[in-house]
Image 1 (cartoon, rainbow, N blue to C red):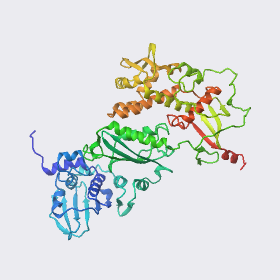
Image 2: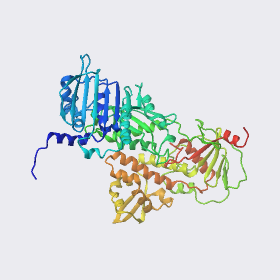
Image 3: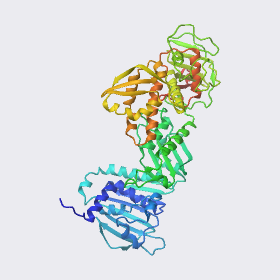
Image 4: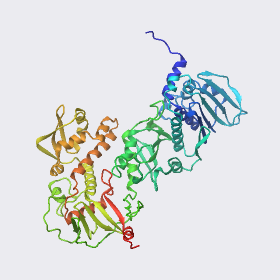
Length: 612
């Protein structure tokens, strides 16, 4: 085949394929140009989902008559001049290719006027063929009409979806731009019908309320803070839902950097990790996170559509988002509300926990145990329980007998005057004006999770060498992750190797799990096939690898180490477990997100019995 130079029209169409995928891409580029021009009001109008007509009107600074033709030329821009400018990009457009790319696959008409000009001027490009500039009627600002998108490229046009679907994508673009720029008014019309109308807001919080509506639920949480890394300062502001308002879809999740909506899986992962254990794993938080960083910290010149960025220090940014969201959650009372016996109404729990005595019920059709402070415990024999296995392991002693020399969780001054253990699974007690039912396994699972994580932060877990390696069959692709996760497993006290193409051999295992008779090979095999570890192994972000994979394995460890439903507990064990509940971070939920307790207002019980 003969090598030849491509015609400029074909080159522009190829370039357009990278910048312009659909009408929403056109809307995004034109809105960004309007913002760069200093617009305070932007109107977007479409017909036929945007493929027939898409118009963007702004009140920005406008384009001078002599620069209209240049605006449609390839690689022509007013926003950068040298290669050094790429290191500090402060505008949304900078490539100088969007208008040229759009005009190569559509009929484009630009009408613009600058301040103090006698009149507006207009220029057209019919699929790359420029007209002369002509006088036109118009006010200060720019109006760009895009007609017949992809009419000259039928193969591209046929891949567009129906009008409603394309219009929905344009709606999302307008919402994202409005979210990023609360001081700018936005209006969007489709087929002559008003879809969105956002007046200029006072701040990001007002605009988030406009865009998200009731998706954040009642009493949303705010994130605010500043940090410094690599000598450069960053500021984070955000709005996010309470854990009980998390949703099953991720459509209401936004991250914006210096006013630019971006797609960053690592930072979204950081937000989700901060919520870990506060709701079911399948649920997604609703949030809008605004990052204001020095332009030198982020490279937006990664992808033609500018939705992806590259961070100078991705690990630092991950930690900034993770810790900021986590701090906002920790600063909020997240105690689960009461479950009404009469309706689905939720009740806010008292902020201060007060322990009070309850009437001792001596007879019940359920197996029941009563723990009262100062009692001598139970005289009947019982199987090995929480205390016995804790005594056998040397790493964690938060629920050990009084003689234990080391504690990872301080014991608060709480008096448990009377507690019932029902069915060797539920602990029932009175707190303030409510009756509280505690799931002993879920609560102890959270306590163990936080203790293990605390110990991991101060050093590796204590490991116990196995006399004979424990083996298990695992898929070859799972064994391939062993080398990747060897450092992580070493921190957790696990030593494992491949003993064949499908055989896993575990040589050392954490002592406290061995004491609970947890099968080492089965545990490691399950860890290697977990979604979090597989996702982390495919990630290029080391911070996401550490946080997600570590938390997932700690979940498994805590679940295996915790007491189970059916384990009978002594008075001392119950007291210590409830003491830990008051001092353990996120004790309202187990690491998997299930509630550790439910709270039933006494007033609700009185209504149920007709006493009110």
